[in-house]
Image 1 (cartoon, rainbow, N blue to C red):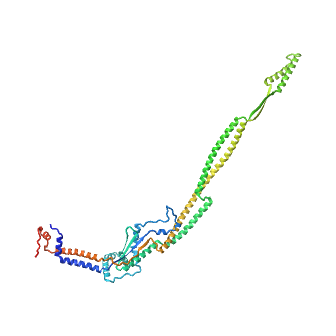
Image 2 (cartoon, rainbow, N blue to C red):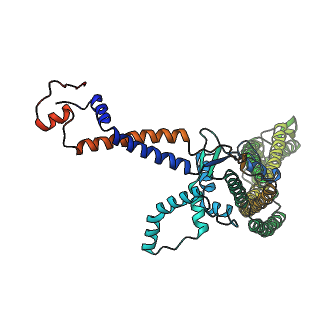
Image 3 (cartoon, helix red, strand yellow):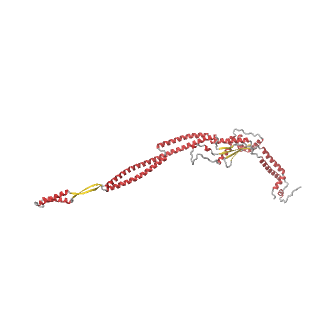
Length: 504
């Protein structure tokens, strides 16, 4: 099987050179004609820098509490979402309509413009037919113009940067620059309107006034309760009462221990005092017992009288019996009181008893004092506990009012801060200080970006060569005559051994 190699195609082009050249010439001519008739396209470009430092100028430092955990100004880097949002915004139809508002729709006067519009109308026929079929509303010339301009507008983010590059293509370089300038102006104005709303500023002002009245009322309620309860610093006063209660409880425990010890000492001293004699012997002497001496004398007299009476009376006489009875009684007394001397003893107070008595009285006095102190400390402990309970109960109300004050203050400051931001935003807008800045103004292009003559002609040549080759091959296939080894093999199925060329 013979393949279609390079020689085959060269021979084909040579044999069918007329069809090849005519077709290629037509295609190249059409491309050249369209290139020459197509109006030049100019592109005006601009660059916009997207920033996020506007927030540094919006909040007054006096309204923001700054700390390492809560800095006054928080700067966030520009994210990819921010850049994409700006790209979508600047290429939106609404912004384009605002840019061309008040401008007349341009008329197509030149031949090139007419050709361009004709091609555009031809391409819009399917869309118009679809809208007509479904009864869609007809677009106004201004809307058609805006859509047309949107097709020639492009915006993209420069890689690894916060810069958006905007380009607009038009046949008139001045119009390209003018439209891009108008579009960027509308873009800046739109950003300014997004950053500041006069109604929002008035709303924040009214809300700040209402919240200030609420804050004043909450502060007044808190002040009245503090004056009524005497609570100025709840944590300090509560800590002071807890410390005082702890000290009183400690003193109460010590006093109870001392009182118990003193009472035990009093009981021991009372027992010891009961066992100790109050008085002790100081001096002792013996003296003659005068009653016994007189009784002895009387006994002797009675004995003498009995002896005398015995001389005159019988022993059993009455007189003798009386004397015997008296002698028996006296002798009985003398036998019972067998003392010749009388002991005289002098006594004095026992010093040990006196010391114990004094210690007892001192301990009793101490016990009485400790008991009184014990009762006083018990009352103070109960009173301090009551004060602590009352302070805790009042502290709950104080803390509730303090939370209300803090909440009202935070709400008030938030609206004051918002109002300040709105006021500052108006000033920043008037000074054109936005989160977007014009890094490069739209330029007026000096050279067209399309069509590129050499590229179009080169493309025409390539396209013409391909079309000519196709025309030559088509003509070759349509001719029944056999001109090549490939045709012979294809028609007869016989392999070709050699090809003879006629040189004559």
